[in-house]
Length: 154
Image 1: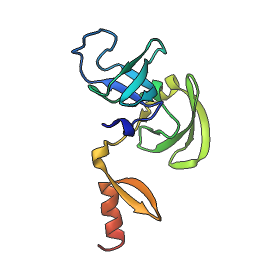
Image 2 (image 1 turned 90 degrees about the vertical axis):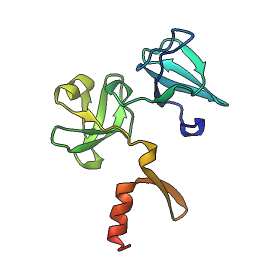
Image 3 (image 1 turned 120 degrees about the horizontal axis):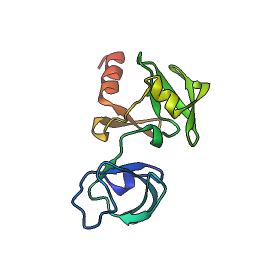
Image 4 (image 1 turned 180 degrees about the horizontal axis):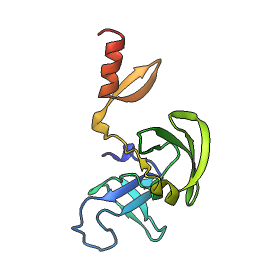
């Protein structure tokens, strides 16, 4: 993971608990609130103390209801997918199932958990291939590359 790959607002988790100070806890999520050179400025989930640190021993945090962001994808028990359109303090607005550009309704996080909905986890960058289309660079999965090759017969 490189500093250039990170953005303010992204959540990270600690991968190592061999620390000189006890501020960080392995497995706990911390939000990037700033970047300076090769350093990140992070704050814990509670919004409490903030601290500078290097990228050593950090990785992107798995998505949780508490770290839900606009653009994230959720799934119902049947595998239908919905896109997060807005996020409030304890609630969110989602798209219709499998129709990402049409709003469906507001839900509180606890309601979504009780319905058995899950948050789709991002694929690791190793699974992506960067392609250029009309001057735009986009990341697609190797599976999508295979599908494109099949469609255009190569």
